[in-house]
Amino acid sequence: MCIRDSINAEYGQHMRAMGSVLLHHLTDKHDQTIRNLKSKHHLQEENLKGVFESDLASLKSEKDLRLKQQAAHKQLVLQQIQQLHDLEQDYQQRNTITEQKLQTKEHREKYKKMDKD
Figure (cartoon, rainbow, N blue to C red):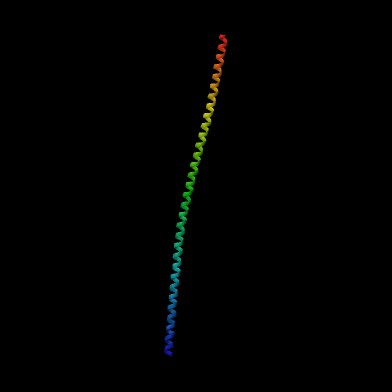
């Protein structure tokens, strides 16, 4: 039994040593896998951040362009309103001048008639 116990003890030590090596190897593999996943996750996060920032910049640019277009359109409408106002004033002035001329002409004709009479 002594040889058998010695073999069993040696076998047990060998198995424990192999188990320890295997555990150490699996732990290293697990740690490496976690580092790889973290690195991959970080890269994906950076890529998404870049895409988000790019999209955000694009949206801001589109918003700025739209605001500029709206401001230009507003300016154009204000110019057109001013032109209409100017045309209305011009029309009223011409109408007033025409009425004055007409009244003057009628007044002259009236006096011509009176002079003839």
